[in-house]
Amino acid sequence: MIKPLLSLLILFVQFPSLSVLQGDIIDTLSTHFKNGNSKEIAVNFSSSVDLIIIDEEDVYSKAQAEQILRSFFSKYVPVKSTVIHRLNNNPNYRYGALSLATKSGNFRVSITMKKTGTAFFITELRIEADK
Image (cartoon, rainbow, N blue to C red; front, side, top):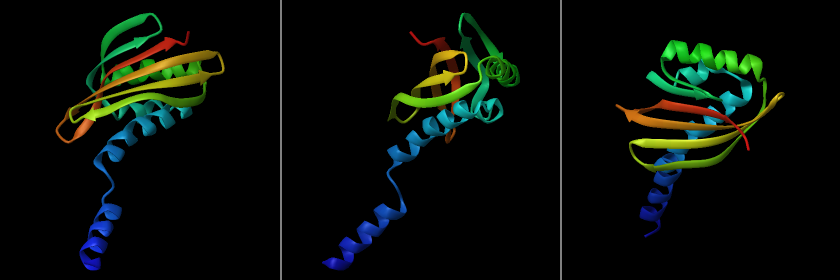
């Protein structure tokens, strides 16, 4: 009786829950926002991204969206990023909300991701002044 239980316990330790793994992408993105790393954030962009920064909204290519995000980070230098909300219970969709503190003000970042193949890619990125 002990051997099967031990085997089952080892299986759970070796393979963490899928929901834990799926939540990590939002945590990783939060770290990239804190560091102002537009290049690493852009790795997660889909081929086209609906980008809303403050009051400007448009659909951009992956490369254009990275440049705009880099420009945002040069104007608003990040200090801290905290995950305030996440949805990761849908196998094809992820959503995360971050609180981004910068030297010039605070922002709320909303990240919408859809699954393509085996990975999640950002389809919408919204950065709004925190109220």
